[in-house]
Length: 221
Length: 290
Image (cartoon, rainbow over all chains, first blue to last red; front, side, top):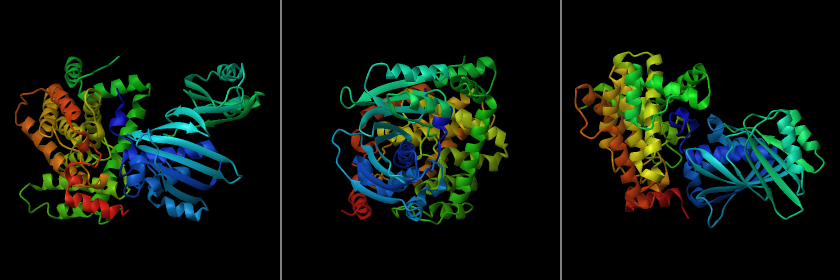
C-alpha cells in the first residue's frame, strides 16, 4: 500500500504528475548524472511526451530539472527562458521508439568542462520515474533512494571491493545491479542505498583500482 | 502494528480503539515509514498551506492556460456565489475547486490529491468547511489524514489513475475522500465517514477520462467544481441519516471492475469521448499544429 503522502501529495507544479512532475525528475536525474553545470541539452521525446509536450509543459519541466529545480519550484514555467539566460543551449526533437514506455525521454547533456551524460527514462505515473539507461548501460533507477554508481573494469572482485567499503561504513544496499556492454571491458554497478553515502565513501570507491569513476546521486524527492 | 486493507477494517479499528479515523491513519504512517509523528503532522500541515495558497490564487486567476482552453472561470463562479440556485457555501466551494485546477493548468503549485487532475476537490471542500463551520486548521489537517486513509484503500483495491480506471478513479476517489473528510469535520462517526464515501463514489461510477488534446483541462477543470459540490451533498445526505445501500468497500470493488472493463479510448488516451468529438479534435489540431 502507498503512503499517506502518495495520496495527499506530492506538492508539485501542474498540470500533470506524469507529464510535468515526472519530467522534472527525469531532468534532475540527468543533471545529477552529469554532476556539473550543463551548457548543452539535446532532448528526444517519444510517445505521449512527443505528442503533448507543449500543452503539458513537459519541455519546460525537463529543462527545469536539468537546471536543478525540483518538482514544486515555481520557476518551472519559466525554465526555457532561465536556461537561455544561464547559457544552457536546449534542443528538442521528437522521435519514435518502438516498445518504449509511452512517456519516454532521452537526455544528452554536455557539461561546462566538456563532460557528457546520456540518460533514458520514462515517467511511469504519479510523478514516479524509471531510468532505464545511463551512458549506454542498462539500469533500473527510480530516484526514490540515494544511489551510488561506479563505472569499472568488468573483472572478478570489483563488486566485492566496493560493497566491502559500503559494509565498513555501515551503508545498507536496498537494490543493486551490475550491467556491462561487452565481457571484460567496462561495466556499471548501481546500488540504491538506504542512506545518502558520505563523501569519503564515494572517494574510497573511486580509489578502488579497477573503478574508473564513482559518483553518488541523492534521492530526487 | 496497525494495518487496514478495506474501509471497513479502518472503521472497525477506529471503533475498537475509540479513536478518530485520522489517528489510525497517522499511526499506520508512523509504522510504515518509521517517521516521528511530529514530522508527519508537519508535512500534512505544509500540504494544507499549499492547498490554501492555491485556492487563494485560483479565485483571482485570470490567466489562460498554455493551450488557451481554460482559465478565469473560478473568479466568475466566485463573483456569482450570492445570487445562484445553490447557496454561497456550495458555489464558493465550486469556485475554489475550479480555481485550484486552473492554477494547476497554468503551471502553478498545487498538491496532487490524489492526482493533479483531481487536485481541487479535497482542498475546496475543506476550505469551504472552515468558512461554514469555523473548524480549526488542526481539525482540517486531521481530516486530510482521514481523506488519505480512504484514498490509500481505493488506490490499493481499485485505482486512482485515470489511465487505469477512467476519471471515476481520479475525481471519483477525490470526491469520496472529500465527503469522508467533511463528515469527520462535522463530528460524524467512523461509520458515517465510510457511508459518505460510498455515496460520493457510487454516483461517479463509470466516469470516463477523455480529456481534449490529452491535457488536464477539458473537462477536468470544471469537473473539479462539480465533484466538490457532489462531495458536499454526499456528506450532507449522510449527516441527514441517508444510508448507502451498497457499503463502501463494495462500491470500491465496483469502481475497480468498471475501470477494468472500460475501453482504452476513455482511459486518458485522448482517443475517445469528448476528445474524439469534432470540436475536441479541432481543438487538438489547433493546439498541436502539424
